[in-house]
Length: 297
Ligand code: SAM
Image (cartoon, rainbow, N blue to C red; front, side, top):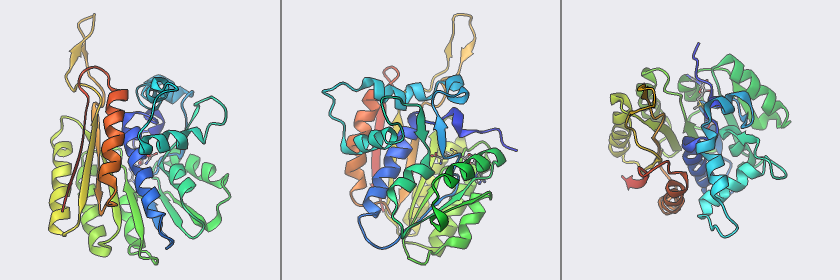
């Protein structure tokens, strides 16, 4: 079984990017009354503790959500999408603590209406069990379904959805190299089944050929299918190896990541531009900070 557990990474800079973009898309899609089916092909555990062992061991949230939180002063005016994201996390933490961090299923659950549906795939037995327990507390009935299945395969049986409106988040751990190819296969198949759905893929920006090629392959796919796309990236530090006092090579950890959206809301480019410009400033670890929001199709 895989060793990846999102609890080590919850609230890091990649989650800030992904969950800010996720929320911005959801806000737009729920403006319309028609029911929407939301699919999370790699859902994780749903809720995380930032004061728990996993988060404390990795310290990743300290350079993500918690860094943003600490940078705020009474005079800070956040870009609306970033403010929305901060408010969403705060809504899980009554009072002044920041102990709970909501994963994508819980962010989505807060945005959807009774007529909408939320389908969650999580393959890891422990995280699937935790997710089921977390979701059970919501007493949401048929509104939310948790499936301990391979999300790459499982999605197929739900497309096209009865309401003809769908939003798919594909957020693999990329722990195995084949995940990169499977993301492209999933989108190729999904666009054939349901060309007008909104699809969001998160990907790491790391020095690995498969990672480098993924956004290029997704652009080629979207262009070939005649679908509009958006690619947004956030860089918070240098990708260079450094050396510590003992002469040991230190890897920088994840320096940057991106979200690729097919059929994005027309407002998303401007919304993310403002949010990521500010996020890059507030999350920078040194001089290597950057953001980009590119569209096409
Ligand atoms: N989407 C979550 C969020 O934003 O809160 C985080 C998901 S995490 C990056 C990826 C998750 O996918 C892990 O919990 C992992 O166990 C799970 N996973 C790995 N391979 C999978 C597969 N083929 N199908 C479904 N889940 C998978």
